[in-house]
Length: 267
Image (cartoon, rainbow, N blue to C red; front, side, top):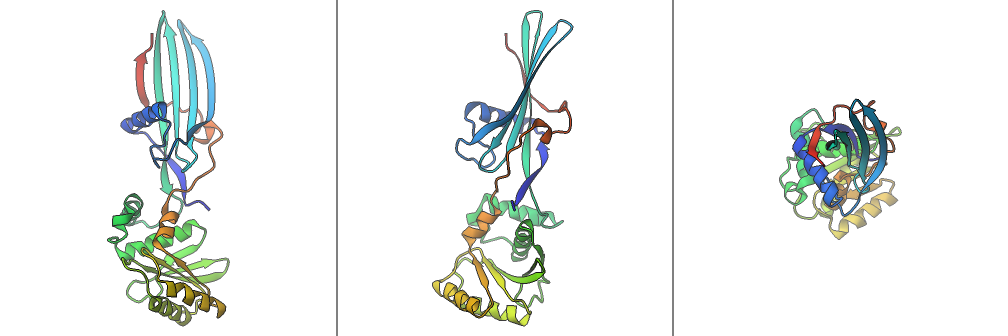
């Protein structure tokens, strides 16, 4: 299940103008900064006359193959009494979390900062906010996830429930690698809380003995998964959605209110 979906439309004119110039000149996604990956996925044309004017309208939707960010634009050409005008309007898809993490804006801010500057933010993010972010990521993958009481968590930071089974999660914001004693302590917490399996999430990495310990617990019927900083960051990153196929998938009816990006006399 993808972590992100698209629930809104950017209508900031300066942002749209930047997007339009980017697409015209380089065909790059301005959201994920990917390589040449933005491509047209849908277009439609229409022509009509009104009074002394002749109109030609072209609608086109671009979608990034990497992250799914989209940009739609409408070009309207009007010719009247030998003079032609072109109006370009547009709208851009913005990204929202699929599973709402929390009503607390500071948690969402921390999540965004982790995405923007992982190298710095992973060492300074508030541990409690990190637990809420981890819970939100698991909810995005279809789990019922809730962070436990911070003062009396019994060594379990997040409890997951999926298909009738519960799992425990421990979250550690560490700069140095996790040592095997931490894994053994987590296994004890799972046992004391009656949880048959667990996931250990850290912003750093694991020493070699940790993986050996996990293999032993799996043989004893207590599977434990280790998620290091790199893997967790990948879970936070943008996930691709299927490209839009129709203009109407972006807008209800005719998008008459698209913000104007530019208007110019063409001849």
